[in-house]
Image (cartoon, one colour):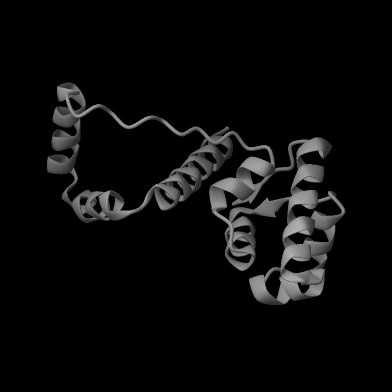
Length: 142
């Protein structure tokens, strides 16, 4: 699934962010391509703030190579990153709804257990990834 470009301003911010990370690491754009597995032409277009369509997997690969959280890279690119606040422990309705969902979809139980074990940065990355997937799914349906 491709992530469509949203405007020059966001892509310039992403180019600047990636350039700064490359400078911190002492890497060239070809080194980023090698370390991330992203094609050199794609890296070059990103650094010139002229991407065409960027695959979500490209953001994942770049985030890994640059050692930044995925949500941060998506946020710099201009994608809205919503971080819903977790429900209060006293939110009985939420707890009941979650219990019903887990009863209806038992395959979700191990996933929920894993989510509870993640630290905040990893939960934000998972949330950003799921939000991006949902956005792409909604766009594909239109």
